Length: 169
Image (cartoon, rainbow, N blue to C red; front, side, top):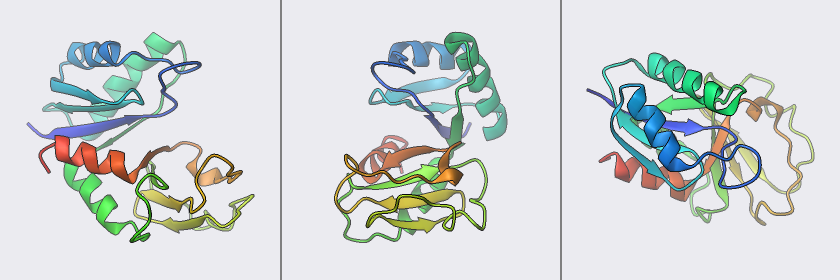
């Protein structure tokens, strides 16, 4: 049975999108996923299932929609896909907490970089199904808007590396 890593969009520990990780684990187990583990309270969950990635994504999105009363986006990747995306990130030497991978369901559109607004020193690059962003001065004061990232979800390099490690990669 393959291992998958699901990255939930707009989930945090407080305010809107609050989802206790114990509840997320329970949802995954109810969907038939095995060896369910979460990492930090920002919607990262690892599991094994005989389902395809697309079916696992749909099953989790359905349960999350019932829980939240609205659609909750989920990106599902294999550990190998996450490792390839991390290895391809172009900001070598960047502080891992100041560089993020924005995971998408599909390749970013060709005009993704041209549509970026309010860029102020941030570096941006496109990947296979990712957008890479380096916030050299940190994210706190950034006003960066990446329209192509609207349906995606971001994780910093530290988080991506930890998820790969947890998956045995």
